[in-house]
Length: 470
Image (cartoon, rainbow, N blue to C red; front, side, top):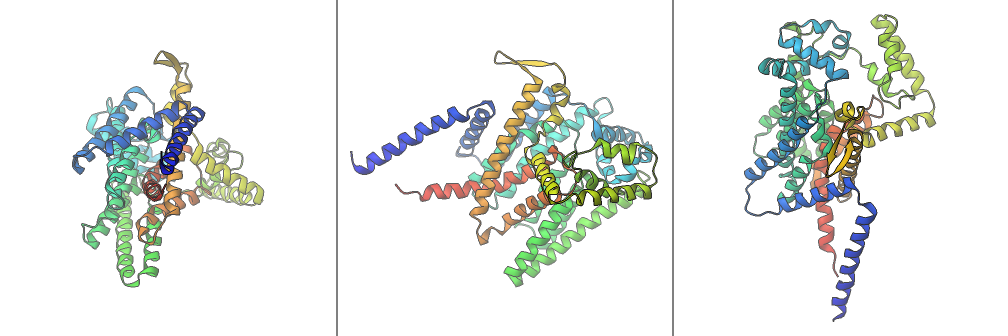
């Protein structure tokens, strides 16, 4: 055997042996499932002879089936804010707008857009079938988001990489199980991705691209007010391009201004329409901006929702809006003045809650709190154990996406300006949650964005492996 052949043999033995050792060390149910699913994705994207149209349909069907199974197996009842909005949607479907008298809809009138959206579904399918109908629509939008991830990436990376990331996103456990919850995140994320697809389109004229993207972002923001994240990121990217390429940059900057104008017009027109039709006299306003900062800076709750704060500001003695405002400003100042050590501890805990919290609890809480169990492969597993497995699987998936995204950022090239938009969006989200209230379920949009940024990491690793010479 030649010296080169012996070297390759030894490397082969090392790789196989330590791959097995790695499996023994790290093998658990979530890891095994993720490994099997990743291999399935790799196998599917490497199948030859399938057109883009076939892959889109196949990805949508796979995502749809996974999510449909979730809503059929996990019967999550509406609770908390979701219950308030669902009840309001039922009232809206009957032409009863009295829900706007609730302080919830007076102070956070921006939730009215989602109430109308759900109310239309209730009207179409009837109150008896409304809950299941809304969840099925969640499934459709969530599955559609997987397709949009592919369409966005198909212009930015290799075809196989785009397919892999899209199909991988179809199996992300949190978005898949979260469809059982009546959240505005499913539909809002879909329209945000649609806006990102239009914004990066090469087949549309500049002005048409801006109008289409602005419209999609506007709809997304009406349903869930996260539009500021993408608008800010787009504006920053356009400024970066101006500094790099002045002539081309000015053109892109003007397109971005048009996009923002359309986005603002859509939101303002929707707010005016909601006022004039009597659905909510406050339109889509946020009449208590301070509340999210009050809870977000609460050291005791680690920046999460605080019942103590809610009791003080909303459920205790009746307060005027001015009195409520003064109390909130006082609390914010006190909490910001707690000192560097406490603030740093708070910020770290908040990021942990966002990135490593258990968002699956929203889908499984009802069952996890019960003594119910299910037999899987001869093993009697409680719903509490299943919820924990789902959480571990979610963390494992998120960890992999973060590592891949970091790998992509390290290998960033000047030609990768399109990816800068997604990096900036993730940075904006992270920055916002240093200050405002955080919940584990808010990872929904960042996880989708990480599925996009991970594509660059996959290609960076693939390129590095290709350069290895034995």
